[in-house]
Structures are given as structure tokens and as C-alpha cells.
Length: 109
Image (cartoon, rainbow, N blue to C red; front, side, top):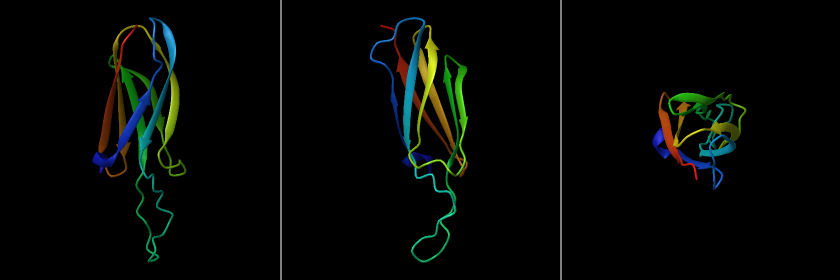
């Protein structure tokens, strides 16, 4: 069900070689813990993004593991040193086995 996931990434407007920049990402996902019940009293199945891996130039620069207690639409911020133009590749993995990928170009300027 990864096709209904949307991601946003925000970077500084200007990045110079060697800058340590804050990367902010927000992903739209219900993050259903499996603890709640629907209107009929039936359990709502668990469905969470359980991990995020971010690479830049093929090298891992950030990784996170999520648990059911994380809020829906998780927001994360992390820092990375940028030495060259490239692409940040984000890979979220869902409990249902699907993966959602998002890319953000990074240009020095």
C-alpha cells in the first residue's frame, strides 16, 4: 500500500561544499498501531512504517527504526554534510512488505 504514501523533503535554499545541512522530512502515513478498534469493535490491523534509510551518493547518511507508538505522518529532521552535488534517496519500509522511495536532488550553489 505504499502507493498512497506522500513525502515532503525540505533543504536549505543554498548549500555550499562542506556545509552541514538540516534535512527535514514529513511522510503522510496513518501509522496504525493495531491497538485501536473500528466503529464495529473490530481491531484495526497494524500498519506502520517500520524503518527509514537515507543514502547520499550511495552511502548511508541516516537510518531510523520506528515502533507503533510513533505518531501518524512522522516528521524527522537530521543533519548531513554535503561535499558535492548528488541525490538524497529515502526508502521507507512498511509492515505490509512494501517500500516507498523518494529522491531529492541536492545542488551546490
